[in-house]
Amino acid sequence: MEVETAAQTQPREQQQLTSAAGADVAAKPLHRNPRLVLSFILMVVGWACAPLLLRDYFVHGGNRKWLSSLLQTAGWPILIPPLIASYFSRRRRSTTTTPVFLMSIRLGAACVVLGITVGLDNYLYAYGMASLPVSTSSILMATQLAFTAGFALLLVRQRFTAFSVNAVLLLSIGAAMLGVNGGGDRPAGVTRTEYYMGFGMTLGAAALYGLILPLIELSQAAHLARTGSAVTYTLCMEMQLFIGSSATVFSLIGMIVNNDFHVIPREAQEFGLGKTSYYALLVGSTLMYQLFSLGMNGAIIYGSALLGGVIMTVLIPVTEVLAVLFFHEPFTGIKGIAVALSVWGFVSYFYGEIRTHAEQSKKSSNIEQLDGPGDSSVHAV
Image 1 (spheres, rainbow, N blue to C red):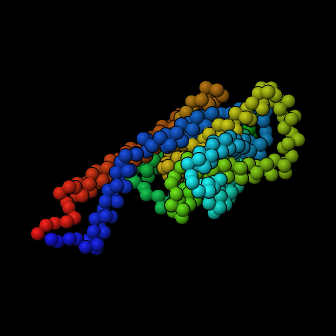
Image 2 (image 1 turned 120 degrees about the vertical axis):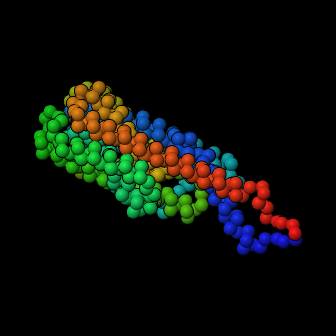
Image 3 (image 1 turned 120 degrees about the horizontal axis):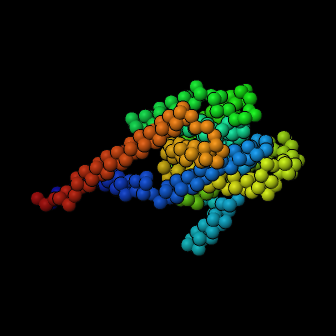
């Protein structure tokens, strides 16, 4: 009887592990991952409503940029009840001491730093929103995909295909076309200088956001590599809790320095839609931005930073249509072409993902055939 040695068996075991991993990928493509689908839904609801509500604040008399920055992260307390429920659920199932947080101290510290960076990014975005139409600012924010792609390549070694490169190029061309058309859709009461300042601030916000997304992916990947823990939505909420609270503190400091708390009551009294609508608008904006942020974190954890950027970009047509309907903003031919390029880029990206998944499934099937029943590890002589 001839028996394989350990050295002969080890490569075969590695092939089996590769086969199992490939089968797992084949079992859960992007569009069939329920947590990723949930994240996409949260992003759709949040991004369709939040920019419109924030622009509504500026259109009807609001002028506090630090307050607008605060609204984008101040909704983090809504994460506390589900996190408490998750903790007690883990505690009931565990026979050992249950930690309050799944994240490590190192990941928590990284989220605090990321939160401060998000706070700065929110201020840049709010500054741009005060001077630009919703449609223009939304398309400009789509340029974050180009920045996300570049930083993802440097930080997380993102693998690019011809389709993802094509998507990035199409979106970048669309934003460049808006730049050439700059000033043609300037809102009433906004000077040319203010318009271009808002244009530059929004591009800066897009660039910084393009850095933040890969940093979030890098932080959670490093945490999972150190701890060997599973990816859960509880971890996603914990990260958002730390990022959101840190960004909120950053914005609160800005509000205190800018004396916003003394001005808010007077601004509410003079608001074009009334005092009640003023506070309802603030609360609504806060909730919508929180849904979007949670969805974005989920897209990064269960997908990638580049995927999160692509999903954000595909929501642009929704915001464009709603801005035209609610604010009667001009929808020029340049904007139409930019939107078409954005949709084309999105389709290109996901077509590439589908092809990559099909190739991985085919490769997994071939490996399984090599490891089939006819290939035994013990052979009789």
